[in-house]
Image (cartoon, rainbow over all chains, first blue to last red; front, side, top):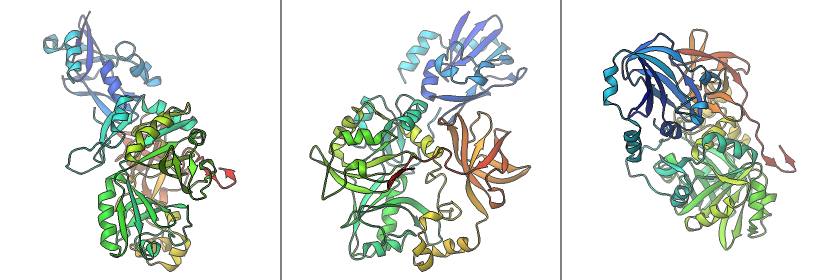
Length: 123
Length: 385
């Protein structure tokens, strides 16, 4: 399994043609206390860059984009009862949704962990 | 991911306030607010909010405008511009009031303190330059206004604020009571370690607490001394907003603006009885008209079902009919769910009325409730209410 990162502070774990998507530790830290996560419906298809989810922190609502194109095959139901999972475990249990990739070549331009760390350090 | 905290409209560079370095050294996440750098949060809005409700929080509100006003018949002159009883405001007392325009629209809300030989005003940071211009335009030339732009303003809020402040050993000036003996909306002057402090028992969280005007150069030492008390932590603007929302207190620029009138905003208490009878203040016609004939839209509180916050701008429905708009809303940390404040048609404003609020195409069930959402915890004469 490989992990990719976007400059919108999302992470993507790819296993076969399934991609698990979440927001990074840096993103949750910036958002602050998360009180609600609006997840997409299963079966919905996204083109890279579409609005896919909304994260509501105490102070504001923020969009989460589909980092790659695909069909939603599963969403993280645990976030419904415990949105703060995104704060406490952004890069594992706080995942948002899984996509079935439609174009694996979209992964090519994304960052790996080391490049993302460098990117964040430069912000 | 943007912070929706910029309400200033100035196109000028963001300015540093006296505690700028102090906030940064303590990990405050700084944002531009009304043209100044202020911390939106330290540890997190939720933790800071709850800490203030159970212990004490220190807020830097030095962006607010502080001014001294004096001169012949200053109280009577100020009464021409606001609807509160200022002539009857006794020395050492503080009153909430409103600056109204000629059409009765709210230009700002403010606190007026009778400091014996002058009046002291605290106005909103984002409005202060307009307020000064307005006051200067309409007050006689004999009235002096001094903008205290070198003063910092700290708010110490929470049920244990009094314990922390009392421990600092403030020395009352000119026969003032001990600081812990002030009641809600009373003010006096003190010396702390040789530094003059003007303290009022007031605030914007619904909790007991104090607002302390201190010279900018003394602000760091005072903030250090307060935060050295085990009850006190520094708190950012984010929690200030969620605390005031739970307390049902309107925020100028969001819940109040020049389109909004006093009575519709539910601020009729700020129109003193004598002023209702005698009148003689700018914007009076609209206030009197709305006292005679209730306004079509009024400000209400709403609790929202579920967890999704309904924020400023969301439309409020009764059935399929749009009946109002949310003016501020969000997650209420002390209540564990979303609450909102907004304008609704008077026919839908009774507590218990079931309405809905549209957020991203979803209709959330909402119920009109009496405010405050969280009971006020003010210390009044003889009783803790």
